[in-house]
Length: 427
Image (cartoon, rainbow, N blue to C red; front, side):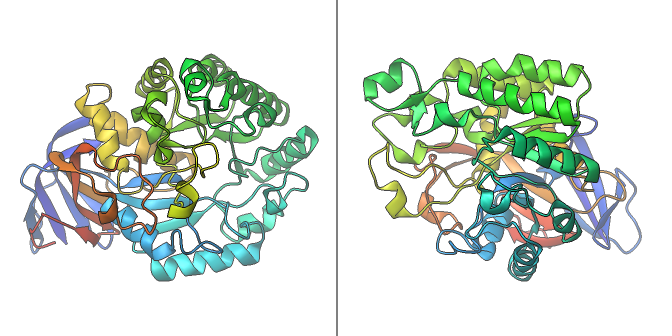
């Protein structure tokens, strides 16, 4: 039994941040602010913050097919160093996770190699090609936690409506990428004065709104459980608010990069800032922050997407999209805290509690009976990020050389320490 004391407890359910203590036994939280139990190992946390471990919805891992970009082991080590205790892995692998056999393979490999929990989403259509839906029932039985074709938008409306109807009959969660594929094809930036000055192909923010409206119409028709993976523009917020107000089973997420960066960060064609969807205007960024603060946007994800050096050292238009973010997720999010945009409980509501709730997982809470998946961190510790110090195999981070605040001191999964740095308290 472990008794963690002298901590600042970040409770995303009560939206509080207050001094307190936590008791852990047999991999579970057994008491919050309870008395010291006889025989418990008392650990003084020295005023550090203690929060539920991050549940990261939408992580790309290279296995199978691209292990040189990221393996289950390297992703797990990066997650532990970043305070991520549960990875929800995407199915955009090679081959795609679209059969029970592939799902069982990656589930087994993840359990063998990663120090954190990893759950997998499965593809919605075979090969993520948008032509024929996968065997959703069998994949559910094999452990799929949700279904998505990631950024391969299912353009065939009839195929998508059938998949949503079938998912609805099984109670499966479908995750969609709100983009109109024709408008967004070949885009490298958000259209506007900046992209025109740089001579880069852009996509209008309206492409996100059109994609949202199409998918929302099908959700209304089928009654499916649906999550929009990345809402990044102000134009998509009013229809999202209407959908929630009308009682549809709809949630939405956004990425940490769209909350902390904008289109001008691309600068002189810096490909580490090329993500999908492209970085938006500052007005859009501020609108998305406000939507997270109000709870309209439910989830913040890292959208960790490792790319090798060769795919990034290309002209901006040709370079691969994506950035690694498992280790930088928390310090990047703390930029919003230090700027006064979001409180620590609001951040962990979106990074831990809400994704766990949406996926039906017991994590994300500081409550008796919840798994002891925890992160202990110093929100004020300053550092300059060196991308070569990251534990991910790929080093494509837009925060290379950036001054950041906030360091993870320890990460626990089921009460077991999986990462510890600068915190020698006998854990």
